[in-house]
Length: 263
Ligand code: PEP
Ligand code: MN
Image 1 (cartoon, rainbow, N blue to C red):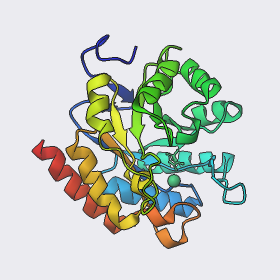
Image 2: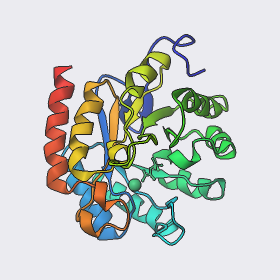
Image 3: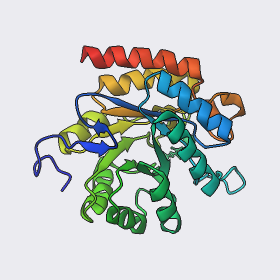
Image 4: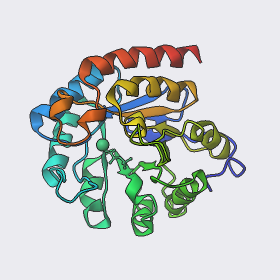
């Protein structure tokens, strides 16, 4: 169902008033985790001013270690809703399991399915039963084919509003957190009609290097970016080492929009 052979023209995912996968690129920005009202609302204002059209923020966090910050859960969802109301930005947050799916659906505009859940088939099926747009992230060691098959799980249940997201894969390289697979962008654009996003933050995992990968993603033909932005990255409760501060984000957005215009 997701193949270009079946449907040659690009699919547009409609999120509120936005058309994702159309001629304009879209940027989702915000902290890895929602931490406080002040943190999420100030970030929402800053990323909106810099040109982002959507806000990200994790409430249910799937952390590698069970001893790390697990997110504000339901309170995080409520804070995201407040930031949405104050700024008009659409919001996306990760749905970690089927038990919390209904609560997340109620509070978000796009359901994010995380890399660790890309082959959680029960979750994919449940997300496929909803009619919420989905940002499906590529698994840590998943092939392009496996990502497309995960999308089939959702689309075959009737939810056609799927955006794919390249977020870096595990390779032998350990200087970076992951290896952002830029190859995946033109490959996916050729193989599927679904919009393709890139997450340069998890893709490289090195704050200073994130803007270069934002530019590369757009130059390679991505429909949009999801990037981590925090008011004070060294103090972030998760992923501060790969989060841009407001001025770094604003500068990177200027560069990205110049590339998008030139294409
Ligand atoms: C995130 O977006 O903060 C996240 C956990 O991403 P991923 O699922 O790609 O690791
Ligand atoms: Mn993160």
